[in-house]
Image 1 (cartoon, rainbow, N blue to C red):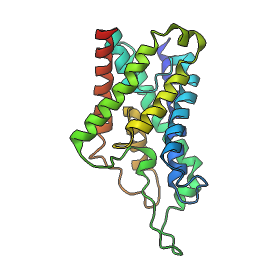
Image 2: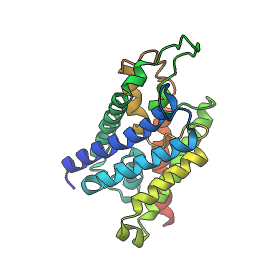
Image 3: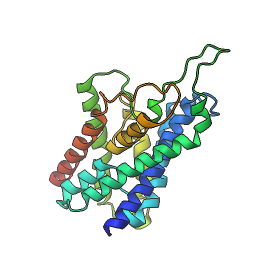
Image 4: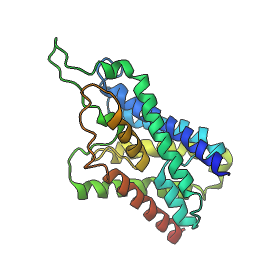
Length: 245
């Protein structure tokens, strides 16, 4: 695969991933959304479907990694680092693009993010639509959660490559999508399961600059955890896979 194909594939695939993922968070969170308050299960499946759509779309061009933690895990396992920067750049650009597209889809709802004078309901904080927020702010615990959750993603992805039937049937991406749903349901409670550095960082950058009324903080003090945790988790998954399989 050429650098150009990889970049374009990762941009498109990651943009679709974030559009679905941030989109379901917007649908559940924003006032005047028909899906408001639909709940965590809906969010988990929305992110899983985002992986499904994005990875299948990007696969012919780049393999559909869409996640620096996956890219790093593969590089640690194989020792091939020459194209890592292309993957990471495409993923970051795609994540930012997906966040902008989400904003445009829910533009009217974002613009209506003001105090409701009839009910006295205050504006909705919007960062959780774009990036993760811990339920309990404990840097050590939050970092451990992201590391373990990311290992739980990347190690199975690497192992799926050993299952010949999955590759031949083309169902690997479907299984990974269900894996992401499972991680969200089982391990997402403490931190919102970033498990992907650019999935958190790209939309957080966009949130900082978007003209959303009453949008609240972008919480840059926490932003290093959903970047460092998944990168460490991805690297550890590559090491474990290389040593055990």
